[in-house]
Length: 373
Length: 198
Image (cartoon, chains in turn red, yellow):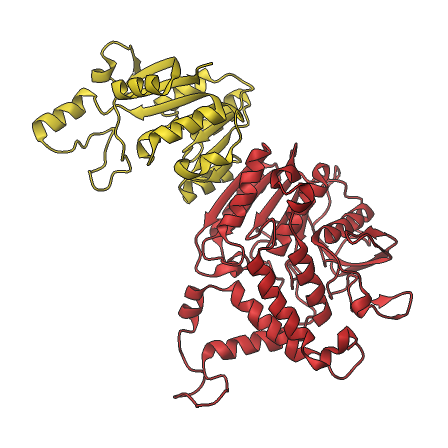
């Protein structure tokens, strides 16, 4: 497939679609930005889809074009890693609604030749998955050997297995959940309100304007970032230490290291992310409740499934705590699915899945190899 | 392949190909792997220790981290042909409730446990005046995971009280099977196959 332009780094394509959205609308055409690593084998049995999280992107294992940082999951994906381009054909697609090249609120609406902004349809996690399925059709990949995702990526992996059971041989769901809790929705609402309260947001029509809702988006990121860490992790990293000063200033500068750190997280985030995308994707996550469309019974989402599942949670993750993974496991057990689940210990909270987690790697590696991958 | 622990060997030999099996307290999945390799059985497991779970998953086994005392309620009625509880009953907080769960989830249940009335243990207690520390029960009173010691006779009368039927019983001393005669005195381990009465 060496000459096949559909495969490789930094691919872009526009497909007719349409994506049939949960809202009832049909979205077309659909732009996709994605990357593939490794080669699809002759019987197309080695395709692994990596699903990214809220603010992630397709650059799972290659340098990010804006930040210049290495791929966001190079600890798991890459040469000699559990997900290895030497053995697997790895696909990572920027989700629908995002801002790294796939259709989102910042994309041009072919109808008006203006950015969609708030005319972009409200989407769901299932819509993201349906869009991905359209791209995989285009790539000629009928069956996925595995769908892997952490956080919102895990929601997509579960949705993949539920929507397209025959296309998903196995799913690895890390630090994730089958529904957004009231607390999850509450934190997202704080972020959205921060963005929409920024006068530069301008009802979402800030594209092409000099005034960007950076302050609002930065605050949204700061609030969210706290939920990705743990109290113990913050204490260990920062404690009450002061930032570049000997004493408190009796003012509202970033006296504390933790304040300085959060401000930096907020400011660097606005360089690479679109505020409206943040609104749309957090909304999609909040609408997510896999049981809802199955009569409130999560097991029904997986009835008769032949997909193998592996769930991993982290004990210090309070965003999607272990109990949420156990709910999924309970449903999988009730559905008679082949499910594995382990809670790993880490001080790093929700973010643990992106950090050095040798035990996670060992489990993913073993699970994939046990599936003949 | 390393040899199976004798009680697990009995269970592995008895379960027929094609059976649906849940191994509760499956450790690193030794029995599940044997059932898969010898009989093509796609067993499911539950294990409390995360390192054991990880080891089992890397062997390709479907094992979930869970606690027999708390998490068996997650499984539907009659989900399995066999529920297996090997060397775990004596570590549970409520063995009676766990046994009820086994026979709700499984049509039959294998239960194996160390016999606390085996003569070496009786001797250690009688003459030593201390809680016994033996090869089969190597822990001291304060660090033992075995919080509900049980003897073969205790177990049999308990099973009768609960209204369950015994479909099979195996007794082990050393690494070997032995007969039922004076099992309560002579057997180190027992394996029972139980069934709900109609």
